Length: 521
View 1 (tube, one colour):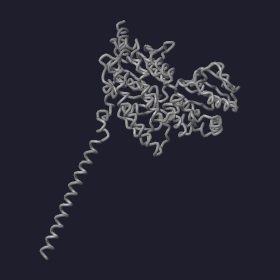
View 2 (cartoon, one colour; view 1 turned 180 degrees about the vertical axis):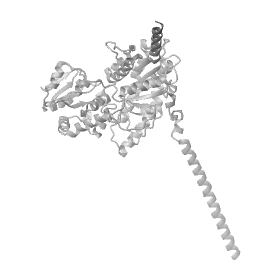
View 3 (cartoon, helix red, strand yellow; view 1 turned 30 degrees about the vertical axis):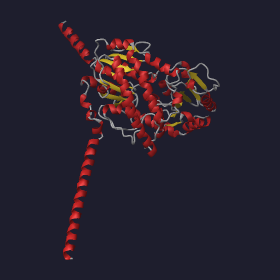
View 4 (cartoon, one colour; view 1 turned 60 degrees about the horizontal axis):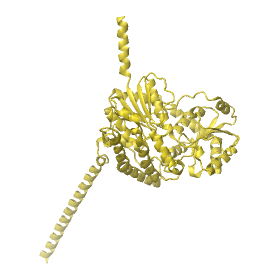
């Protein structure tokens, strides 16, 4: 009996030692962002950790996991977002008309205002004023830097999850190099390599973003910290404290770029094995002898919000096809709906893309959708509207597994020709399959990679040994401006001394010659 009790105590202590308290903060108003966060946090709970997730959505049914899983749902962010949409300040389809410079300014001005109310939520404030402790705080990077102060407040290491590839929002936080000469900024659709004009505009965009963040975004976030967190730290003491950054990217999807040691690729970690489809969808897909085109503008944009002229152009193009079309349409009726088009307000995207009869995915070009289509090897036709969608669409074109039509250039003729080009030219599907093979070819699954590194940070108390020295340098030292200035000064002084010495020697020689002539005369 004594031995049984001893074994039980050892197992209990062992379990307690491996179980961590983890706080996740994924408050973005985009459902696709929530899917990323909840998928990661549920996997950590399944591993046996005690998880708390602050988000704008939450689970209808608490997931069954080995560890505990607690939802804190903040409704204030979605409310703020809807207020701005209703007031006409946010119109995503209008956003498509903006060039990169004003688009960056718009995003920097709007997002901190949308995200701010989350920290004021009653349940969040209750958590902040509690005596709870966490072993690590995981925050999604999405113009919400004030939320990172929760890691300082709870005395826990900070892990940042980027819903995109390496970009300005995360590179500056970990000292990662990001040359504007060959790495396009978010909201652009520049080719790689960039032309001279693209590099010029990209450099100006980088400069503008620097100014916007330093003089508007970070001061706003700092005020938010002071407003909602007791004895809140200064924003500059929070920004550069990330132990690691988990990147929702992979070289098979995104341009290969430099990474410092604490940046880890986990692109595709949210992709789940296909689930059984509802009977009507299964029959629709199974019976499509000529194949199916799947059409969705994602979780944030609504196809039903297309202007009538765009919608009608798309419908006329669909009516010419022999293939069936499965369209995520958010209303009960679609005026002029062709016979080969099936509608649904919600569709299980990952399971649909896994069906062998799906020949083409027409998408807005969001990174989650792009990741899922590469995972299943389905070519895309992208209609990008805002944010990173244009760059994702350009990447699909560059890598040969899709085409892009800018939203403002959607016409019946161009839409039809693009669909026919992808369906009739096998190079697009072959490229998609090749990309899929490269995406799957990994030593460890992306989710296992994410969990390993999160637990690594916990084991090594923040893993400060992964931090690069660049973070401790002021900007002028990082860019070697002091060294360059010193070398310029030395060069100027040396040149000045050399010039004066040369003049003095020349003058002396001239004077000697003059004296010699005078003596001869």
